[in-house]
Image 1 (spheres, helix red, strand yellow):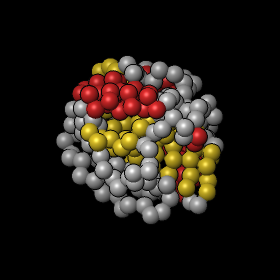
Image 2 (spheres, rainbow, N blue to C red; image 1 turned 90 degrees about the vertical axis):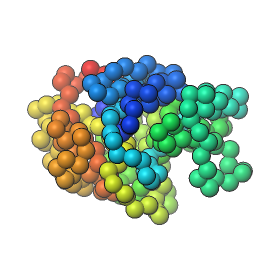
Image 3 (tube, helix red, strand yellow; image 1 turned 90 degrees about the horizontal axis):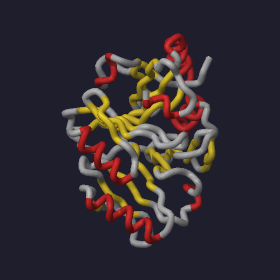
Length: 252
């Protein structure tokens, strides 16, 4: 059986088009219409597409995941921050200490992200989105390593990280304490698999520790199978045809 691909990262958004334009400007990626939402296209196989889907649900708590954006120099970090602020981002105080040199921001809909100094060795050689940084358990890191077939690149003190064998963005989980989950996750993984393998892929993910999500949990449920990972985060499994190699398959 083919291991599913991380076909896209999905954001709930009040204004998907506007949020797509913001992230297009920040990341210098193309954005296009995607049904009633927007698609931030992957520009290389080291990246994944980002889908913005309309939602009327307000954001009331910090997201469990946020982007860590990389920079090439102190000047590049400052320029990236200024570009984000010019397009509608705001500084965000999450209790960061003065000696911490990463800059914490929120996009126009309040989604948290960080701009990381250029000398961060953990993110060296990754991508513009150096990490999708998550609040999660060691168990969920192990689950996603098995689910995607991505090796663990960090596993210490219950902190875990995985990365595609092709490189690019790392996905990380910080270990305990993990904040209680409130409502449906506003950021969700979208996995793609061959149409004839959809049922078997879902069975495999459940055997690894996923659970069926309640019907109607997300608006994706009419077009994909919705599951939850061991930490309760919703994600979707969708049949993609033809299923190409690499994350750009989601650009069909």
